[in-house]
Image 1 (cartoon, helix red, strand yellow):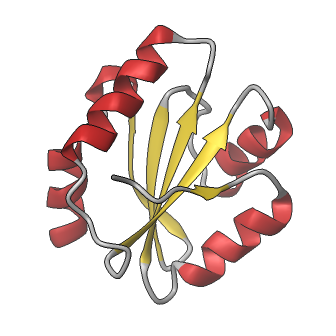
Image 2 (image 1 turned 135 degrees about the horizontal axis):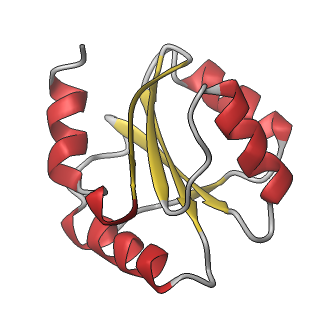
Length: 115
């Protein structure tokens, strides 16, 4: 089970950047209107094997928080997509994946062996 933290403001983005100095952060951008996004969320939650001590998971509803979603793309220098995951370490996005390419195995590999 993933204990999601809500990402819905510029302040939340600043918090993530600060937290990522000490611990990796995951941002999951989700569209509640998209069946592919729902499938990606289900797969992520089903296979989740990270502890809160390893990785802080943040959930961003791109429908309710569109400006924040666009700001995330700008701040972390990624193309906006949904669904999308971003792995943040030391204020930088070190991994990004979208749609049905989102999976815990690749997250774990990148987490364990950052470039």
